[in-house]
Length: 220
Ligand code: ATP
Image (tube, rainbow, N blue to C red; front, side):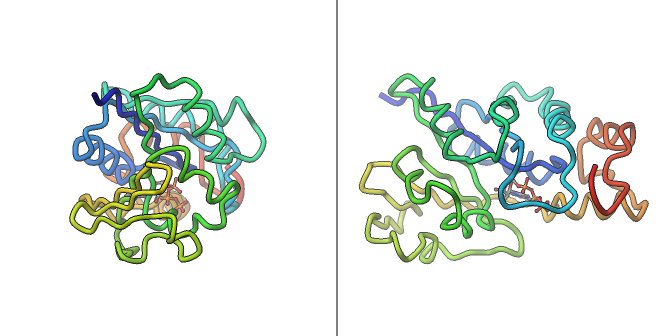
């Protein structure tokens, strides 16, 4: 029997944009997830440029998911404070899960490519399933998805486009219609007084202007 399939979508969300939202919606349907929880990082270990304060980023994610009954937001990384390590977030959700419910960590191929640099690597492959989404301009190849140093721990299933870890957890490789939008592009547009309409939800656009976010090259 399959229980609830819970998707966890972590990110800096600086700010959240329609690329994130559309990808999460398609993955939810494609993979039969019951829910997707967006988890904004408090202190992202890999991003330093012009990161808006975490409460603003959290508030924008809240605005963005409103109206989608399958989406929700967790402030766990803000409550934990300190550097945000995804493995600790996975452990938190696992500790609240009741088998046969399962956890799926949703991640873009660009971020997954760097996974060998993450703290607690490679332990997360024994802690939850992964769904790797291919992203525009980042096209990564299914055959090279798993870092070479741990490839022996996986069995490749080319037909189903997944790798099975010896723990039983799987890494799914999924292509969705990815919109070529990035938070970097949104921030740059704000800085140069260009429109960000149709890059972010209306409520997020209003939030950015109301709080004068991303006006300067550094800081909020
Ligand atoms: P930045 O431009 O500041 O680097 P970003 O747009 O990549 O930010 P993040 O918050 O770092 O946004 O991304 C969180 C997750 O969402 C990552 O796994 C990333 O790969 C994925 N992601 C980001 N943009 C898209 C997009 N357009 N389509 C699908 N996934 C995306």
